[in-house]
Structure formats: C-alpha cells, structure tokens
Amino acid sequence: MAIAITLRPEAKAQQADSATPPAPSTAPMMAPPTYTASKFDIDVTASITSDYNYRGYTLSDHKPSASTNFEATYNILFGEVTADSVQIPMLSQLQMTDYAGVRPVFGPVTVETGVAYYSYPGSMIDISYPEYYVAPSYALSSKFTIGVNTYYAPNYSRTGAWENFDSINAKYTFDSGLAISGELGRQRFGTTNATATDAAHKLPDYTYWNLGFSYTYKALTFDLRYFATTLSKQSCFLITGTGQAAAGSNGCTPAVVATLSWNTSLSGLK
Image (cartoon, rainbow, N blue to C red):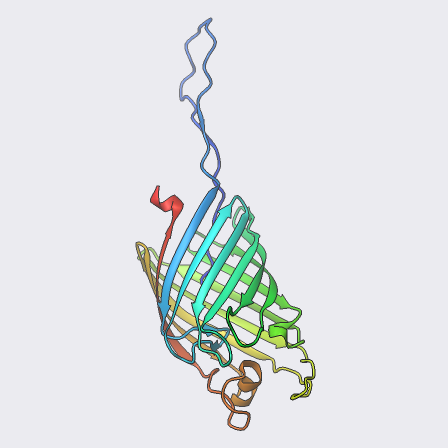
C-alpha cells in the first residue's frame, strides 16, 4: 500500500463586495447574495496492485490484489469502507476495513482521528479487531507535506496481544504531477494469550519503511514503491502465520510494488 497524505480544507461561504461606494439613495439597498458550498462529498477509488503490502508484509501472498474504497465526508466527519482481495491461510479472500472519525483543518494543519475495524467475512476463524489512531499532518507548502501517525489496538487479531504502530511520513509533489513520498515506522506488540495448542509468547517488534514515487494524470495515479522491514523469516512467521515454523515465512521479504488507481469524487463531477 503506498502511503500518500493530502489536505482537505473546508468549504467556506463567499460574499460579493462592491468595488465602488453606492450612489446616494433614499431607497434601501439589497444585500448581496451569499453562496454556500456543499459540505457533503463522496470519494471513490479503485485500484490494482502487484502485491498487497501492509506495513512491510504481504497480505496477498506476493500476488496481485484489487481493492475499492468509498469515503463519505460531511464537514469534519468522515466514514470509509475499503475492500481488498487477500491470500491468507484460513481466512476468506476478502478483507474489509471500515473507518470512522473526524478530520478538522487548522490552517496548514490537518488532524485526522478515528478508528479502523479489520474483518474477513466468511472466514473459518474470526480475527476481526478495532484499531484506534491519530494522524496529524502539516503542509510546509502547497507541494510539501509531513505527518506523523500513531495506531493502537488492544487485542491484535484477537491474539490477546496489544499492538502499536508509530511512523513519520513525507510527500513532495512537483508541478508535473510527479510526487516522491516515504514512510518510516516502528511496529510493536505485546504478549499473546496461551491456547490449548500454543503457549503465550511475545510477538516480535520491527522497523518498517517504504519509499517510492507516483505520477497522477487526471483521475489515474501510478505508484511504484519499495517496502522493507527488519523482520527475520522466523519473526515473520510468528506475526503472519504463513510459511512453516522451522523455515519461517517469506511474507516479509523486501518487495517492489506497482499500483494503478483511479479516483473520482461527487464534487469533482459537478
């Protein structure tokens, strides 16, 4: 998943003012009309990627994945639904991620705060869980944006272990439509609950980063990005459950991922 952070200022009412004073008159003057832009919008994105990479490890077994995203916004409120195709043992081939939160804008600063709920409808097991986050960003200019992210889940994938992901990111956009962006983060975990077949164990922490570029032409965006982590194959197996305990997992190996996406919005169609 390519990480790209954007600012969405709120629409403001506009009022026309006369450049010259009115001529003296005994008749009452009519107030100029006031026009208010709609505060409601819907954003739609569809994409296909060569590998669904989530914080450094594949959720599509290094195979192509398709996704759709619908986001509705009203003033600072937003709700979002994302569906991705995945390839994970014992889970269905559909990952649903539902978001809800607020996104207020204070000049160049945007502070997004919300909750994400991950689920896999129709799976043999239920590992759905919520994750709470805050993600402020600052626009140093119209082209350069930096941000920080903090995510926390009290029960990661229903294992009993807490989960925390912290990262910093930056994006610079050129006039040509080309953009360079990257993210550096640290993923940490707690200790899982003991089960009938597995003892309690501490999930491994790791550092994750990605770096790449994207090019946007009208409604289409092409993104090419490099993902990497500090996870070993054995540590990757403990987190993802893919591969084998002795040999480990190849799900966390470095990867170059290409993504093509299409985006439109209700306001853009007006």
